[in-house]
Amino acid sequence: MQSRIAKEIGWSIYFDRAIDMEKKKQEGRVTGIGCLVICALFAYFAIADISITSAAGLFGFFAALFGVLGSVSLWKPDTWGAYVAEYLKSLNRGSESGSDSHDKQIQKETSGSVQVMGDEARINVYNVGQEFDATRNRLWKPLPKINFSVAQILPLRRLQFPQVGWEAFNDSPYQLRVRIEVHPILGGRDLHPLSDNAINGTDVFEVEPQTYVFANGCFSLPNACALSEDELILEIQATVEDINDPEKGEYRLVPRRWKYVREHDAWSYYPQRLKTR
Image 1 (cartoon, rainbow, N blue to C red):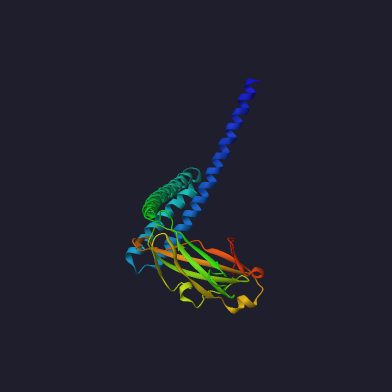
Image 2 (image 1 turned 60 degrees about the vertical axis):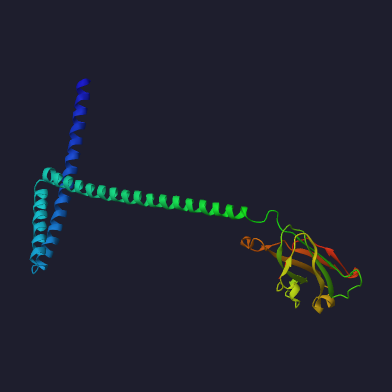
């Protein structure tokens, strides 16, 4: 029984070696044919560049080298052919290894550059954030506050619509420069600007702190507001500037809005958000 197993193992090893030897021969023959093809190409270039001595000599050298390698590979494919194939493979692996290391180096350098750029970007964003915080600390504390009132009935008389009476109050602890804009919104359509410079953003009012009334008067809306039955909203916007600290810049207050109630000829405060076209 043991001798039978030994014989089977021996035959298995024999067949494995035979298969391996055949693979080496086949690889050696392919290598030999490949070397001869390369030899023929170099020989062609050497003949074509015969007028250039250095190039012809170089091509001739490589033609002779690959000719010898191809010949010995076909003569002994299982030994010389296998050696030549293994040698060419090692050269190829060395080239790929060098290329990979070069790619890794480039990737490393690129990654380093990206890291540096990312760090610089974070520093820049941080600096901008610091500057923004420093500027914000210098802004309005408390926020400025301008109040308005609109009415058809004044203390001494009643206005005929589309005339409208108005007053403005400074409820802020600042000396301010104030610009006022009145926007009549008829049926969703903004009719700004009006012709009155006091309420179209042209005139500038210089206002003392906590002033009860710093501006008042009457303005006329377009006749379309009186002739139309569409919804009429009056939006008043104000932009202020601190006289004593102009570096704060201008500050635009949240608009105030009133809705005209036609059946009562009166204005009702209307804080809803508007949609204009």
